[in-house]
Image (tube, rainbow, N blue to C red; front, side):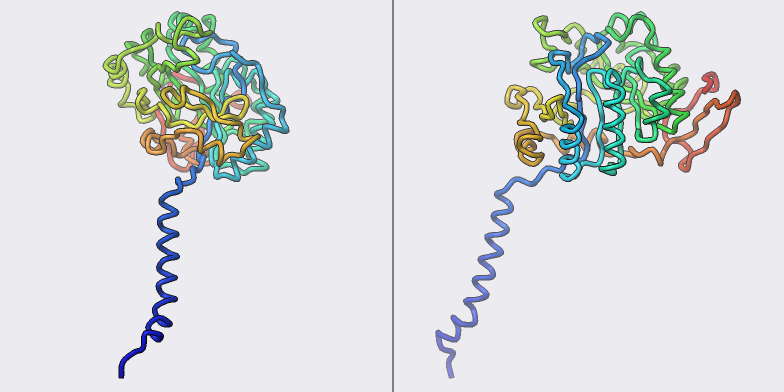
Length: 352
């Protein structure tokens, strides 16, 4: 007895519909771009600065910063989109100390971010600020391009008094349990310098060394507020610096090829910045106007480059603090943290 055509249709038709449905879902998902998750964002909330570093790529062409309530709104949107780490930068963020502190507090108390960090030149950091807001900070990164003040002056980093600020910040970070980090821009005036002794003295848990970068629209020629062309070095010259310092466990190198497009940078208007060759560096619409997902569609973010440069690491203050020496009430107290130290070895010549 044969099977009728009607029976075959009744049996296979629902299966065919199910298969067609899943085929559509698979093809549609491949057609749509994968949603970007802003894991780590650098928020340059101001362009104002009290230093004049010649290679600066975020120059004081605009004095604006968002009102606090609007900044809260933008940060909240980032957190809902998947933000885990926020880094405050500038300009110099400590030109607005209360504003900076309130943002950091909001990120920890209201958004529960894993990590809140600050990049600063260190000149405006005070113990009073640390007493009130230090508990909300996981990492403080200080910009140090040389342990020779004459070189710092030539670069534009201070007037010959930068290094005391660095030492002060190192002591404050150790005292308040904040991870102490250094950022160095390797350029024509420091690529031959041996910074090893200075690094041992201040013992950062992480030392990031960037190859100086020219950014069209910011520092590419004498028509801009800063002209980085005078500081440019070749890849070979950058490698000379790296070879001299890469034995330090805290050393992290970032040549131009790794830096470009691997950072999500939010400017003072809460727009993501595009780097050279990406829409002529045109910023996205503000996340306050179009939301985070829509803004991220407009930016080219090299997620593989982000991973390659070690964009995700031990960035919370409750881990990896290493061994710190701090001076309290006139005596030294040795503080051992759970992992025994992950950064550069501390010199006994430095008194905390």
